[in-house]
Structure formats: structure tokens, C-alpha cells
Image 1 (cartoon, rainbow, N blue to C red):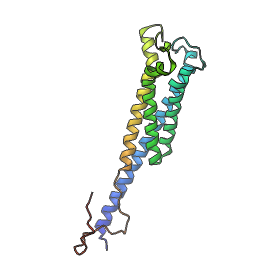
Image 2 (tube, rainbow, N blue to C red):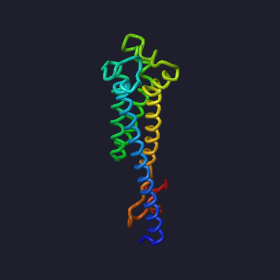
Image 3 (cartoon, rainbow, N blue to C red):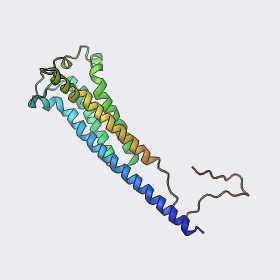
Image 4 (cartoon, one colour):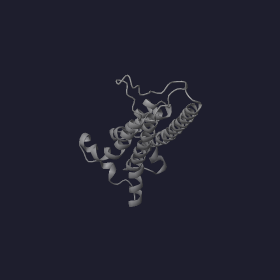
Length: 193
């Protein structure tokens, strides 16, 4: 028979665990929303940005190219898929979503440097991004580096939150007997952990 004190402690521990899991799930969902917004921005900025005077390399709005696909659209869509998995709310899918978003953010940051490897030419869009040094810096941050870094940082945070949620120690159900050290059966040893 379980004493009322043990039941009370178990109930309080279970309530605290549920609170931690609920809070972690909510934080992962907020992170997923932020990643989704950044992913959509990163995917669409080379297509829409020039319409508002926020261009890169003198390219016109809605111009489709290999670099727009590989440097913007693909990682942006990967970030959006990762965000949707984070918003879904199941722990395993949230981990996959956070990892996908980290990879998408990293791709936004490193792909401009790697682009000449598969394009066979120097990336002309990175030079002459704007009329001034400030304009060039803002274009590089918005098109690649800042967007990717923000996605990667928020996704890494979400991964930590989801991992913490998954590793929370389960509480025994009400009415279940805790493992006891039976002195007559030495094969059953319970180590609290």
C-alpha cells in the first residue's frame, strides 16, 4: 500500500513534469513560428526584394535562376518544413524539424561561398549588391548571412528545448509500486536515476 505522502509527492512531481513539458512544447512552437517567417523571407527575398528597391546584383524581381533556387528557395523551403514540424508538437518530429532548420540556416550562410564550386564561376551577385557600403552590408545580411544565422540560432534553441522536454524523467503512475530492493532476490537491483 502506498502512503498518502508518497502519492502527494508523486502527484506534485507529475504536475511539475507536465508543466515543464507544456512550457517546452510552447517554446518550440514559438521558435517554429519564427523559423517559418524567416524561411519564407529567405526564400522569397530575391524574387520580391527588387520590387521594393532591396535587390542584389541588379537582378530584376521574379527572375528565376539556379542561384536563386539553390541559395534561397531550397534552404527557405527546408526551414519552412522544419518550422512546420516544430509546430506539429510531437517530440520526435520536433527534433527532426529543428535539425532540418539548423541545416537550412547553415546553408544560407555557407552556400554563397560554395556556389562557385557547382556554378563554375565567381558569384557576380555578391559584388555590387548595392550603391553604398551600407546597402551592400544590408543586402548580404538580409539575403544570406543574417537570415541564415537567425534561423540556425533559433533552431538550435528549439532543439535544446525539445531535447530537454524529451529527457524529462517520467513519474510512475498513481497506484504503481516503486521498485524495491528485495534482499532475497539479488538479481533485482533498483538504482534511482
